[in-house]
Every structure is written in structure tokens, then in C-alpha cells.
Image (tube, rainbow, N blue to C red):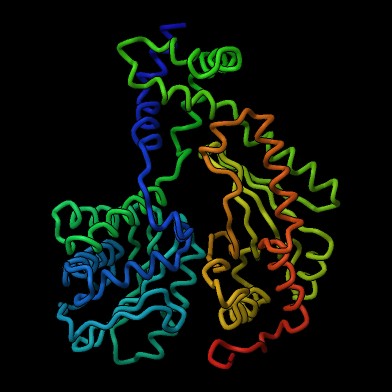
Length: 444
């Protein structure tokens, strides 16, 4: 078995697992405040960095870098780049959520603007449709301006090509901010520490645990991992660690972690949850991405299905859902509309999006129920981590199943959880689907 164990440890995918996903995680303000998954927070940080005179201390440098990157992407898409611009403080205006665009950068003297749509997921054709819709409205509103649209996603630069749009990947943003940070260009003290924590967050955001190489690693070394799991059950962590050759001793803790994670079975866990939900007479749907070891389960109960019908939505329009991976279990609420080009406007989804923008589920915590476009017809309204990767690494498969089912039951029964709040919101909305609710400005 030693030979097979050496092959596993020397596998490049195992070394990547060791380097990227098991390095000690330091204190991070974003994690404490539970802001890590909120798109709006990322947009706020970008807007801060775009303003030359703000407290970061790098002046116009990040904005200049971004415009140069956008121009390269526009040229690659056979589009005219932005004209030469003055990046001085008096010439730059950066706004958030103007005309529903995440970030708008105005260059006053040149009469041009950048409309930036920020997504926390890979790029999709529906994102480009959304951006082009904004672009048409902005060009009609600012007829004397040059309007350029930017789509920012977790897909890499150059991996997608959308006509008329500059696509920029978050990996490039991370590299640029990281370069400024490494060179000590941010103000010492608070700003530099803040940016350091933010870089850690962004890296985790667009390079999540359980990436493309994780399942091939498990499949390639299935036999030795099975033996390791038997040893783990009999002799614990020390039993696995003692088998690691002395010249590979730096990888003992990593191997123990991998053996524990390999005992998880997201597909079987999804099946157990589906069986529980069917016992509650829920209707369920399943899908998966085997390459990234993501397994999805969505469902609707009778009252939620009636609400969706009252709102004029199609079958499965409102759904709760769970995502199962080797590195965590997540809960979410979604609106789904099949992506058809011939759809009459406005659709039920369009009306509800407008209503939710004016009348959020929670005015005290609007970011907690922020609608985001996940592509392919899916719009996420709520997301919560049910179990983390660290939780999973400490449990057997059967323990994980029991824990997930228990937490799900508590979540669905709690008066304080997002489950009842979201359900109640949409049941109330079903009585006024025309979007005639109050606006933020009108509300006391």
C-alpha cells in the first residue's frame, strides 16, 4: 500500500489541495460579519477603489488599470475602446445602484460612462442579455454620452465572448489588487489590513473548495482511500498519519483531511434529504455537475406552489433548494423562469424583481435577501451555509446525514429563520402581484 500512498501524495491535484484549501485561515472581518457571499459588498469595495480621492491611498491607479483592462476586452470583442480620459478626482464620479446598474463610473469632461454589472457566478448568456438591456436604457437616457458596458464574473478573462460587452474576470481583479497590496501602495494600517482580508475573501470566492481536480483525485485513488477510511474507522487520525512515509510527513494532516472528506457522499446525502422532503409531500427536482461535484436539490411545498400560481409564474417558479458538495452544504431560495427569447414582457419575474427592489424582504438586513442572477433562468434570493467543510471533515457519512436532516428540520420549523420569512413575504406578495407596493422613498 505504501506505493499507492506515495502516488496519491505525489499527485499534483493532492498538492494543490494541500496548498490552497488547507492553509490556515486567519481572522477575517468579512467572515465575522457574514458578508462574504454578498455581491453588494463586493460592489461597494470596487466603488471605493474606483474613487481616486477615497481613503485607500492608491489614487487613480486601480481605476486606470481597470479602464485599460476594459479597453483590451472591448478591442478583443471588435468594439471601440473608451476615449482617452482624465482620471483626476474632479472628473470622476462613481455611483452605486444608479438605474439598477451595480456600479456606474462617469468621466465628466469626456462625457462617457462605464456601466459595470457584478456577478458572483460564472458568466452566462442571460447575464449578457441583462447587461445589454441596461445598455439600451442608458444610451437612451444619456444620448450625448459614450456608454460602455462591463460584465464582471468569476469566469476567467477571455473565456467568454459577448458581443458589445467587455467581460472581465474576478481573477484579474484579484491579481491587480494583490499587486498593489504586495507593493505596499495602500495606506498603512487600516486600509492595508482591510485589503489583505478582502483579497483572501476574493480568492476563496472565485476559487471554491472542491474544484475541477477534486473528484478526479478521488476517482484516481479510490482504492487506497477506501483502505485509509477503514484504518481511520479502526485507529483514528493517528492510524492514517502513521502510514505516511517519513519523507512525506509534511502531508500527514492533509491526508487525514482528504480521507475524511472522501467518506462524504453528496449524492447519497441529497437522496436522503429528498426522501425526507417527499415524506412531507414536497415536490422535488434534482440536478448535478459531476465535474465539480455539486449536487442540487430544489423543492416546493403545496402552499408555495399555490403562491407561485397566484403570482402568474410557471411550474416550479418559486423553489427552496440545497447544494451538496464535499466542502459544504448550503440552503437557498430561488425564482426560476425558463429562458425563452419569445417571452412577452413584462413577465411575472420582471414584475416581482421590480417590487422586491422597491420593497425588500427585510429593510433592516436588505443584503441578507439580495436577489442575484445565477444564470440559466435562476435568481437567488437567499443563501445560508448549513454545514461547512470543517464540519464535514469531522463527521462520517452517516453522521453528516443525521446532522443535515436535523438542521434542515430546525430551519424549516424556526419562526426566526429565513424559511418562514421568505414564504410569508411571497404569500403576501401574491395578493398584490402588480408591484404596487411602497418604495424605499415613500416608506417611513
